[in-house]
Length: 164
Image (cartoon, rainbow, N blue to C red; front, side, top):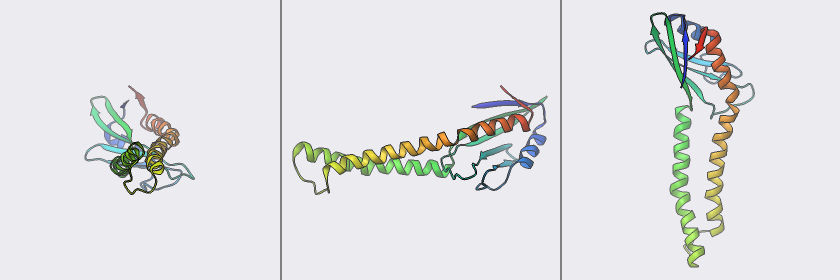
């Protein structure tokens, strides 16, 4: 969890973010974001020019008004659609791939036939899909690291904030 303090009031913080970001989530080489003034929540995402990274982490923040300024708190998370995709990917892999993997192991150990294509493929394919899923999520996180640093520096500079 990242925490910042700004001497600027909450309405001005919201206006500064709103005026500094692009409203389009799919903008290229830009800082996208939105502010919900009713709930004092916002999100920020830094895009890279020639890269469409669905696994880039988005800063979701909340502002709280204090007597002498504003407290900004937030953290980086994946987009909800990407979280659902990962759950489906790994859930399907565990259920379907696990079933094929177990049948392949049993076929090799017991020397029986369960009418699956090839027991070696039944072992290697689920392992390959597992490694690919892990690699893809880690690569996306690594590729968005610069964007995360950019967003944190943006909050500090735009809101004249100090990290707590």
